Length: 530
Image (cartoon, rainbow, N blue to C red):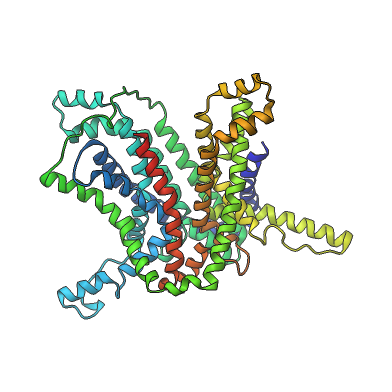
């Protein structure tokens, strides 16, 4: 239960500080901030959900149900946009579609325009631009969930529908889509939670969401209770998303036989149909991966000397230190939870695991407020006590150091560690424990000599996921970092805020390269599962 309390404490702190705010502050926020920010946020989420659902479901259906040119390559490559943090995609699109960028330059040359007053061009810094950018890098959540579901679906249901006269499209809409509904809802929920967590992209693109309102109210206006009040509203939105996702999956039960889509013969698409399938699968890959990488890679290649920049080296070291610490803590706590659930099999251990796994649903900006309050309270109490009794000032031991970032990232990404470790334990038969105990090993010896060696792959996977996600995290890091403390993500954010996208490209490429590791790992795991 202590680990569950680590996760719950920041959430309770948010509501406590929100309730301590002045009534006039709450009145101003309700009248002027929340309605507009909530309206923009909901509009953004609905449009992103529609776009990611279209491309994620359609591409997953095509690569699992049909054979067409480049299918195997596209099936693996469609996962790659997960390696692109949303704020990096926004910065690259801002340069790509800018007046001096390649698209508008080509457009002026082709049609003979001389200035921006001579023609109309879509504005990337708008809610439409935010939908395009965020959808391009978030659709893989839907794609992965649906690809796995379509691959596991029994072929019998589709074959029966075909014998009754239904065409491929009708089978997809009437049979396969309803059967994949649980996976679709899981994917869309993850998409919307990631969109809610974003702060770098929406700020750069000029969309005032609830997340940015929290950041602006706290850091720019110095109103922490007001930020906590907005955060409490945002937590309610997150809770509604989770409830909707669970209600949508309620009573959804489907069973399939062993004839899955993976071992069935796929109909071949050729000619115009094959070209259309390739186009529909290639478009999200182009927008979500190739464009950002090409823009940032071109800038980075022209600045190879910046790889030795002391600012970059220091930020890289800080990123690795914070990420390694968060990975170590999250994996340790996650292992304790999963091992307790395996060995004890008690309702208390199961309940603690469920509580600890809810941190991922809390956006980074919200979590930053909840983490800062208890840590600052502890620092102030300790400093006051030591000043009074010993005349010693400790300063900010926890809230003014990287510990706050590690705490926030541990809470947010413990779900990944716990899920990977639970999957690892599921592959180990309970009879291993019983056999070791029957051979005279006690509980500690069984853990050290039997379970841990067999759990090495799961432990490394969990640590890798938490490490990379912490390295990419911006929302919590930008709000909790100490003075003169930069990670790669905050270094990119600072340069982009000063309109120095080119200078930020080197750090951005390092983040993308690191993010490719777990993405390729996931894609390879899916291929093995076939």
